[in-house]
Length: 362
Image 1 (cartoon, rainbow, N blue to C red):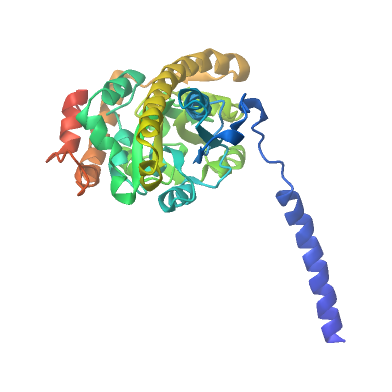
Image 2: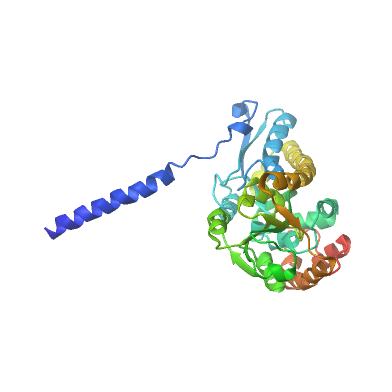
C-alpha cells in the first residue's frame, strides 16, 4: 500500500516537472533566416563552424556573415563559414573549450571572456587605455604590438586574427548618475572577469557579478540598478525600457576577438590561409567603422524611443576615476607581460610599450 502511494506521488511529481520542463525545451530557437546565405554552400570543399554569443543586429556580431559572404567570393566557393551567433553553441567559456579541442574551428569571443585562455587579451579591457574607436584603430595599426597581442592564446592552440567592436562602455542606470557619489549608490551588474572586478574594486563601487541572461529580470526587480555595458548593446537589447539613464564613461571598448583553431588552420592550403586572414582583416576594419556609426545613431534613438537621459561626469571626476583605475594596470601587468615560447616578439614590458604608444597617462 505504501509503495503504491509512493509511486503515485512520484508519478504526479514527474508529470508536474514535465509541465515545467517541456515549455523550456520547446522554446523557439533563434532563426538565421534573415541572414541566410544567397548561395548554395553544399559544394564547398572546406566548411567550418564559427560561434558568437550575441545578436547579429550588432555590427560587430554581423561581421561573421560579412566574412562568410566575402570568403565565399574570394575563395571561389571553396570555403564556407557556417556562422552560429545567438549562443547557439553555448556560453563563451564552453565554446572556448570546443574551439581549443577542435570541435569547432572559429569564434568571435568577447574580450571580457577571452582572458580565460589568453590573459594577455585583458590588455584591451584595462580602463582608459584603448577606450575609443580612434584609439582602437591606432592600436590595430601598431604592427608588432598588435601582432603580439593577438598571440595571447597561441600557446593554447588558438590563433587571434583581428578585432570587431560593439561600442564604448558606460553605465545604464535606473537612477541618474551625474557624479561619483551617485555611482557609489548603484548596484552595477558586471561580467565575471578579473579586470572588471579589479576596476570596480578600485573605484569603491558596488558591483554584482551576474550572467547576462539574468540581467532583464534582475533589473526589473531591482536586484541591480545599473549595467556596466555599451550604449549600443543597452539600446538594442531594450535595457533602456527599465534603465532610463546613461552615463558616458567610455572607459573601455566592447570587443569581439576573432579566433581560430591553429591545427585546423595549418591544414588549409596556403592560398586559403591567406584568403581567410585577409578577409577577416578587411571585414573587421569595415565593422569597426560601422560600429562607430551605429553607436552614434543609438543616442538619438534611445532618447526618442525610451526617453533616455545622457550624462557625463565632470573632467575632475573623470580624472579621479582614471587615477584610481591605474592600480588595475599595475595588478594585471604580470598576466599581460608574460611571454610564451611561441611568441616571436618578447618585450620586457609589453604593457608599458602599449601605454607609451597609446599616450596613456593616469
